[in-house]
Length: 316
Ligand SMILES: [Fe+2]
Image 1 (cartoon, rainbow, N blue to C red):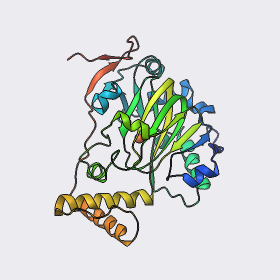
Image 2 (cartoon, protein in one colour):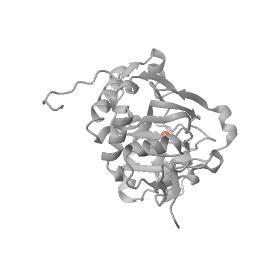
Image 3 (cartoon, rainbow, N blue to C red):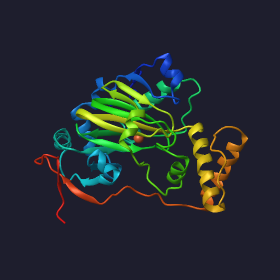
Image 4 (tube, rainbow, N blue to C red):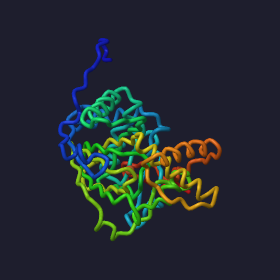
């Protein structure tokens, strides 16, 4: 609704989705085109205002080290009382990564866009069902990166500003193993994965410019390296019947290994056996609860617009 009580109409967000993308969706790395980068909601002014009003318990301010340092170099920081514009300046000049978690679904300005994006994907991909989706906005420095990991849900990355390279590796050993996904689903590990530089020979790399979006197969390991400019992207993590079944099978296999000393024969998500495992997994989750391993949350720096990195270490 706008101020006059009329419903605001949001025209289609997806502007190109080829037959090839449609047939490969969720089976391969595919790309499409959208128009988010042309919308006022992603201007500096709109993003600065969002940073200021978005709940701080849904906002992560982070920095990270180099590729060889990996996920252990990830650090959380404190924005202090900087304005949204000052934070954008610090992102532009430094090495920072701001995640506005759930902004696309929780914020009244962005929710209509999210609804339209989901409606577009359902219309363009007959049979596509989303049971639940988490969707946020990432704002990151020209030199920021996200280390290799496998998301538990199906992912779509909508790129809005700046340039970045995403590398997607096959969702199979050695890049990610069933045992590793089981450990992630059993909340014993974060979604971070080990990495070997020579794996880059076997990845599929996509250079994202504003107006592109991409998706890849469930659990496909991926890492993201910003190339230039302040980067803005919309992330979507989507639970589908297929991802729920596959995760149910892997979780059930993990229960068999952990509780019953049995090595599972199959991790296939097809047939009656898979549905039995899904039911078994749901039962096991009720019986044995784990608490999620959180990435390091201690805030070890303050955002600082006067610093070259955009931040300053907190005093010990
Ligand atoms: Fe991811």
